[in-house]
Length: 182
Image (cartoon, rainbow, N blue to C red; front, side, top):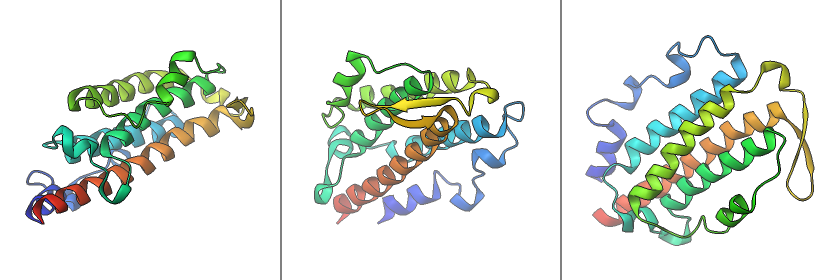
């Protein structure tokens, strides 16, 4: 359990000493909704960097006890952000987005997965900043069933969906590391 313990401490800094993005006083020029979403994405990127550092491709694509792999969660986060923001921008999904949706469980090399995740966070940040606070109440529809929501609802879901999958990714990483040590 040494490796899991070291990751909890985070390269010499105890987790209790880490200040989460929302407590750093950053992005104060951005309204509270977009700021919260951006802070959630920033925290996700930091967690992925901390927990995926040192994982090899086999560990990233492992499915212990049938759980989705770390790689799946990273690809799913990246591609879900793209889909959710497409709906928020009042667009329908492209053929490419639909095709990628069907391949989230297919492992690729480690670096490609990490790069896809990092690029998605960067592009999503720009897309989120492009929304106006005045747009939050604008109606939007999601999927073929055209389920109703709003721009604000989609932006908030970007944050909570990302954080949910990061939590699952961290848990899977802990299991993979513990199995390797066991």
